[in-house]
Image 1 (cartoon, one colour):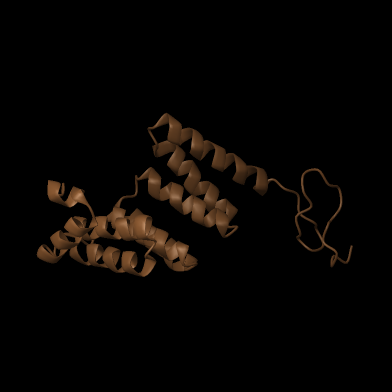
Image 2 (cartoon, one colour):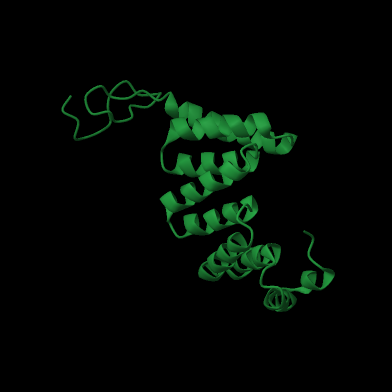
Length: 170
């Protein structure tokens, strides 16, 4: 749904529109985006995204944006779970796989991260975005290939021949 022109006028018009149309999921979504991106009001943004999702259960954009808010508040497991719900709604969305790959990479779940980046790469049609995904996937694949110490499972590194962990019993 495209929002009416007056909403594009600014936050006051958007808030007024939301009050007059409380069941409009898109209006809540855009209010959440404004609060998150412009005001840095994460609690306000989360509330708006929750309302957008309650108005329209299968709204992957709202799920993704809500996940970003949760991630910003270091609620990593909840953010990943919400992206999982978005993926159930829209399994062929490269942006969801890309975002999941990024979140999982930050949690050092590299194999899962690589799987999502590979799916995003297959699904993405924009050459510029494909290149970004390819770069992130390469970084992860390089990390996965890092040698591990057989004694303490610490990263040895590609350019080292011995464990750098001072607590290693080797």
